[in-house]
Image (cartoon, rainbow, N blue to C red; front, top):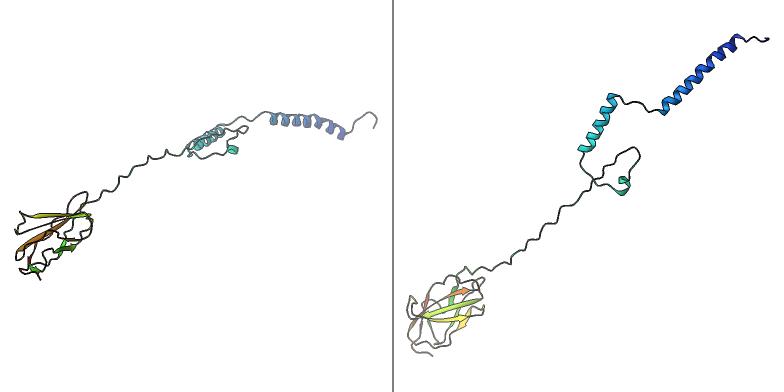
Length: 194
């Protein structure tokens, strides 16, 4: 062999600088970032646009922590303010609207007492009653008796005259107003009270 190199040695020597240059080139390529092409930039813009169009959502503390190389958008979702409470006015009672139905003394009948008891069917919502009676069928001239109880029975304290015909009617009321008057009934006191 002497001082001469073989054909294989020459090939080996010729390829070593080329391999070294290739390895250096690959290291440099890794160290420098790639230039963004137009299509890469367009994709990045589209990604930002999609993020901006998404609705805001709740973000936990772990999600809100900044990360390297990324921008994190934190949006705070607040609940709507409480609605003011509306005061409900108390329900006002209505005036009684029904008419009392007279029971006793029965219409056009005789009574055997100068102190008869007036009875009627009660009126819904009534807390008091007004009873009027008199000798006039139109009851323009009459006597009035007020009952502040809800009972539909009132005894007559002042005596009536024997042999006379009397007319009477009733209406119910409360703190708001009065119901319509009942029908007018008549009765006659016996001339001779037993």
